[in-house]
Length: 103
Image 1 (tube, rainbow, N blue to C red):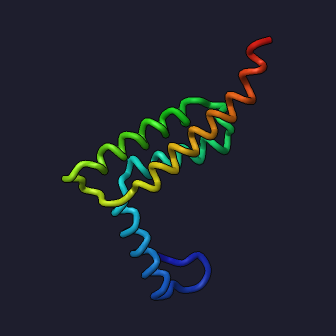
Image 2 (image 1 turned 60 degrees about the horizontal axis):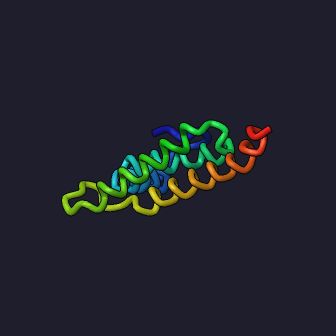
């Protein structure tokens, strides 16, 4: 891997390897749940689909992580964070948009 400015150091290579190891240990659905949860919160729940998808993916990853024969050992925190962020964004969307629908 080539550094953008200057030469790549041993420390840079070590960071890349550690990050790759970290990602491989997490459940992919938990990572997707967190990413969609952050996106849903950024857009304040205006698009309901990412919030709902994040909750579904978070619950699915938690169910898979609870199994004894799970391939991935980690990701519970990411899944819970994705679910919480999505729920928060949907609550905010409800407060922002539901009063306008009653008129």
